Each structure stands twice: as C-alpha cells, then as structure tokens.
Length: 160
Image (cartoon, rainbow, N blue to C red):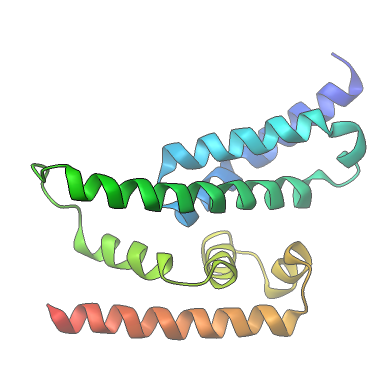
C-alpha cells in the first residue's frame, strides 16, 4: 500500500461514521446518508492528490451538497409515492416525525448549522470555518433555526 493510500484509509476510517451520522440526521434516512457519504469519499479518492493536505472540509462540503441534491429528489419522489401508494403500514413515532418535518422546513443553511452544532458537536467557529462564513452568520442561522423549530414544534404539540 502506498503512503497516499494509507493516508486515505486512515482518513476514511477516522471520519466516515461521524460524517454518515451527520448526513443521516440531515436527510432523515440512514441508508441514503451512507450512500451519500460513500460517494463523497469516492470523489475524494479521485481528487486525493489535490486535496490531501486538508481533506475533511472538502469531503464534508461534497457530502452536504450531494445530500441536498438527494434530499430534493427524495422529496419529489416521496410526494409522488404518497399520492399513489396505499397506507397499510403503521405510522412512525410522531415526535420523530415532527422533528424531521420541522428540520425539513428550515432553509438549508439553518438546517446544516443545527445539525452540525447540536448533533455533530461542532462549535460556532468550526461551523463558520467549514461553511466559509463569519461566526455571526452561524449564530444568526442557529438563532433563526431554533426559533423556527420552537414555533413549528409548539404548533405541532398544540394540535395534539
């Protein structure tokens, strides 16, 4: 195994599970998240010679972009399936659905910030560096995202 292959293997081993977990929350589907994360790492391998100095931000950006594309496609497919498929399956946990629907209703930047901050335990500064924005922007995303989630989740609770 070459040194480049070893560095990639070590990077993959260290980062895959955490990134897949973040993407799973972002998408709401573990299998899709693992596919997206795997695709991001495959693309990283193809470009390894140009990104191997600091590959983590590159892979995270690619994974989130792929996830956003899949999420948009899945949303369209699921809307079609709901209209054409009978509902014979018992409904999932309502609290989880409420949270997933509330997260899905957030703009991409706010949803990413919420997931990265609360589920991946990244600091505001780390998110700002990853997203290429000022820390104040991330604080704004988090504030607006939390406010929107609180409003939506309070409304869902009041309906029950």
